[in-house]
Image 1 (cartoon, rainbow, N blue to C red):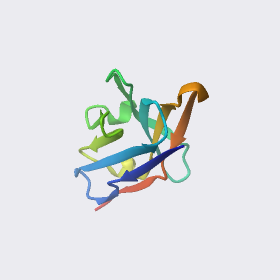
Image 2: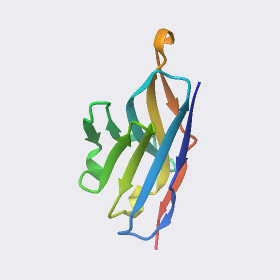
Image 3: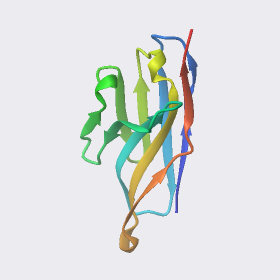
Length: 120
């Protein structure tokens, strides 16, 4: 019902920047909250940033001041601008969206993940 396509991952040197994108398509009434999660090898998946449809934002402490989440409601797309990247930001990044499907209720969906590697 809802497909998520992520892009923007890659290899970057410490201190560099990347911008992730996640576009939602399919059959839904609206997209509510949108999130970025990440999972590093051997670690649990953690929420990195979230944005609701009122533009309220929240971030995990480790990325505050470096990452910015934003959304384009016309394109049903969420972005994650990542600056001052550190090796510990290396992980697979996943987008997660909450979609309101009308009479079918609300469901959450995951993107396929995009690898971010921060290394010199």
